Length: 369
Ligand code: DAH
Image 1 (tube, protein in one colour):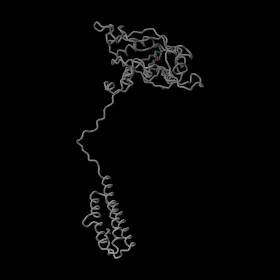
Image 2 (spheres, rainbow, N blue to C red):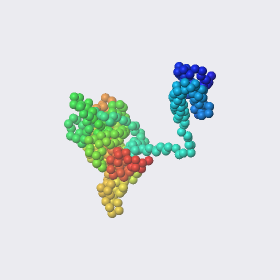
Image 3 (cartoon, rainbow, N blue to C red):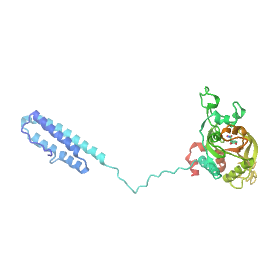
Image 4 (tube, protein in one colour):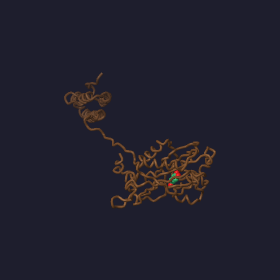
């Protein structure tokens, strides 16, 4: 039964208290029941309505009807009650209102445009290089960026304390002195350790490329960065010759820089290849002439050639480490190569500062989108 304000016969404090308690508990019940916007509005009218609301009725039926001697007492209670009920009804009304109003949806507003990302020029170049070798039947191999001394140096025929180690300024992990040297950790200085890992895992014949990140303790400048990327290659099989190496890399350079580039191989040294060579490609800017109009070509420093990568025939001493897995240097031979991805990307896209790759400046990066 809905609450109605009772007429009072007894205006004693005790009777007033109980009438007030009943009214307040009815208020509590009805507050909880007022859900929809419509219900809340009639709830408020029912309690606070000027003409016939419950508060007005309590004023009429309790205060106005009270005998003279009880007026003071009743007046105080009705005033207090009025303040309490008004506050409670308004609070309940506001609370429910804010809980049920939803922001209106304007479907004609434009949506949120999420800017499309673009492949980073380094990843893109790396994928392009890997793609060239995939087309030649190579698989992709990977290895850890944190390597042991054994994989980064020893198994590649850099013996402990050999001066060839000094050509790669290495970042070592601290606190490893108690370990044997070959187990000490470092950030790999090249992707060549993946050659070793691949030969441990797979018997010959093998053809793999290994793209990845490498680190060296170099001070950053326009052509050096302590972090950079390489793509390594390894092919081992019966009767692999230097001609296979030349043919493969000549083809790869033509794929990457255009079919009219020429390649030449210069004697070089790497501990893990013998013989070793540096590969140069004819400058694709001045077409190998060293000049653009009557100006010297700046890209190749007027030489007509650009040095791009290291390579060579896998040193028998390296194969020897994997003799038990089928890499008997008497029976198989192979070639290896390694190239710097940043350098190739810089040449391909005409970028003159390696640092641009690592700043994350969208104005630079979005040009490759
Ligand atoms: N690892 C060498 C470097 O970082 C590059 C290299 C040279 C890799 C000759 C090879 C290679 O596989 O045969 O300087």
